[in-house]
Length: 385
Ligand SMILES: [Zn+2]
Image 1 (cartoon, rainbow, N blue to C red):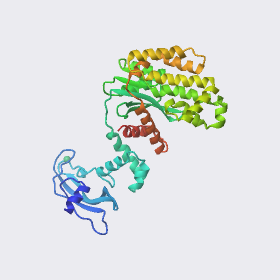
Image 2 (cartoon, rainbow, N blue to C red):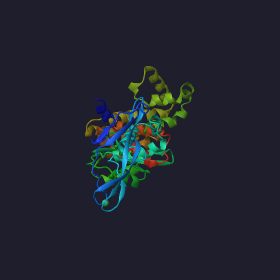
Image 3 (spheres, rainbow, N blue to C red):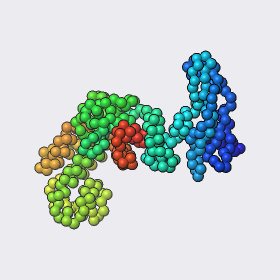
Image 4 (cartoon, helix red, strand yellow):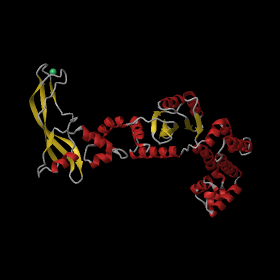
């Protein structure tokens, strides 16, 4: 019964017998291998044991006890035919003082946590855990096929370095990441996706549009609603400094939040404030109206409805007196076809925002990464559900 339990917590090949630990060292288990013939790795000939060394290896972990060690004789063999000598490790992947099973287990524990935290918990040197993680983790990446993908850029260091990522719109998993954000980069990252891609979601940047048309000429290009709404909210925030009265009474963030929300999500009091601010500044009023009109356009369900509503919106704002709104309308009119696809598409970019948030968290958890490849590996491992 007891030995069965030990075999469960310390899985080893069946030819091993595991003895109970001593009272002095309750975390060391002596393992004895049954005699077996060991073939030469070079000529497959018969070998003889000419030496053996008793060594200890980390192999498991138990609460309250800590790391569990196995102790075994590691044989040095000599080939009778070719004279080659080698150490035989019973397929345990013995390296320094751990078995491969242990190293893999520690690598798995690093998911969603920092390496430093895992190293502390298992009382292992930080550099050791780091080395294990970057040795084994790349093999744990699974390839995922996708039909609907989002392509987006994110900052490695704001204002300096950027990277472009592609993610599966269905699962939120990052499928590929490449540093930089020019059109060639976007094409490279898009080409890495496997599967029959039907829809590509991106922001309004011309480089994005060019790359998507080059790599997936038949795919439907959907524009990211979040970025569209952001044009308006960003314009609103730039306009805020002209709101003299409102600024005196309210915090900037409160004003931004009230103006960015949908009117029906505001409280009665907030709605009254918004009405005052709209009276105070001509541009604020028009940006606000244009945003909510655009929200109405985005709610259209059929193609006819979508193009009619979008047409109305453009007629109203394309040559508007308020320059900011006219400028947004100019961007929209350039992507009119994609906009109509966007309105009809059921694909939401919520998953993209979720993943972008996760990227931020992972970056922060590591206090920034010196090695971008390491960050990319982490991101690919830990996004998606
Ligand atoms: Zn040999």
